[in-house]
Length: 126
Ligand code: HEM
Ligand code: HEM
Image (cartoon, rainbow, N blue to C red; front, side, top):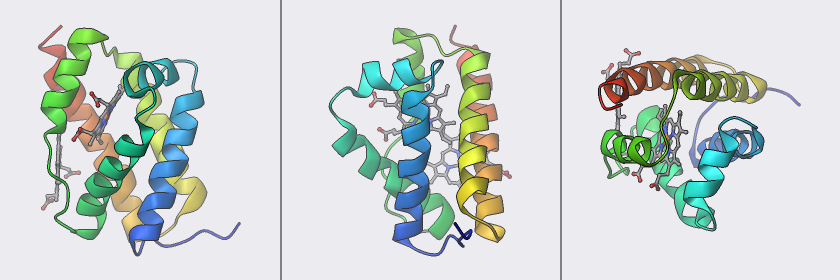
């Protein structure tokens, strides 16, 4: 399949759906998503469209505090360095399997920087 540019809401949906399809099947991080999100994927995925739409297309549509959400998650299921490594690998792989161009570069970079900072902040809570 030809690689695409990240241009609009449809690109965001493709990126997010493809990442979570992989993440849910992953033997290391899949169980965390499936345990916490359970039957609520219809709610979680649109939240993630808003988050990535905001970051990549400046849509100003995401309202939330991912840091607080992951600190709470970490108290329930400890998020280990290996989980972050896998998350980053799957996300970056997904970006480059589907997309090319500056926004793809931005998606991969931002995912890695946010994950790195999230992991550092969370380490203070374990
Ligand atoms: C867990 C929560 C978050 C963490 C740890 C985090 C961390 C970071 C980091 C480390 C950067 C620098 C990226 C780089 O230079 O490569 C960044 C940039 C940015 N983040 Fe976040 N972020 C978080 C949540 C959000 C949210 C919720 C939004 C918007 C809805 C957002 C929007 C942005 C934008 C627009 C930039 C680029 C700023 C610029 O370069 O002008 N971030 N973030
Ligand atoms: C170890 C890696 C990670 C795991 C296992 C993980 C898992 C999860 C889970 C289970 C939820 C749902 C939480 C709930 O509804 O209570 C969630 C929400 C979310 N995650 Fe992650 N996550 C990880 C890393 C990241 C990173 C690096 C980012 C950003 C680049 C991110 C962005 C988000 C956002 C935006 C939400 C929605 C927060 C809200 O409700 O507004 N996650 N994550």
